[in-house]
Amino acid sequence: MNRPSQSDLVRITPRARPEAVAGEGEGVRKIGGAVTVRPARLGDMKQVETLINRFARSNLMLPKTAEQLARNFREFVVAVDAEETVVGCVALRVYNETLAEVGSLAVDDSAHGQGVGRKLVERILDEARSLGLRTVFALTLQELFFHRLGFRTVQKEMFPLKVWADCRMCPKLHACDEVAVAIEV
Image (tube, helix red, strand yellow):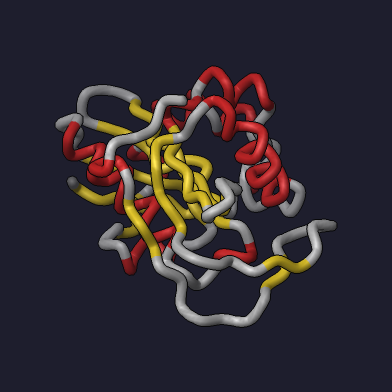
């Protein structure tokens, strides 16, 4: 098995909190111990698909197929608990030598409030810096979350590559409720 190096890992120690519902039909489970943020593995993508599509059913993000995720798994970073259950994911989608997108950011209900989303975004911002990118953007319904991470609200029209790649296929194309945010890295 291909294990990430220690420099690839970020540990998050959760705050004390009561048991939380993990999501539809999954019952109650405790998040015990630390959560690890690491590069995604191909074997993680089934869990990532389930997590993303749970949010997609609520119209909070676009759905993804197992095939789409398998083709693009190298873009993803995941947060896993001690049992290697994926509790969060995010992708860094590179558009060109200066621009990338925060995509498919999702955190399981059981891990909300533990800093998982923040650690995932910080991890891909570090990656963007190491790649020499200048700007990272996101289209989001959670504008304040991104503001706390240093992003600022911008016009969607600044990202025609995104609009061409994804928005034209979106069922909300003509009634988009997402806000564009960006950060210079």
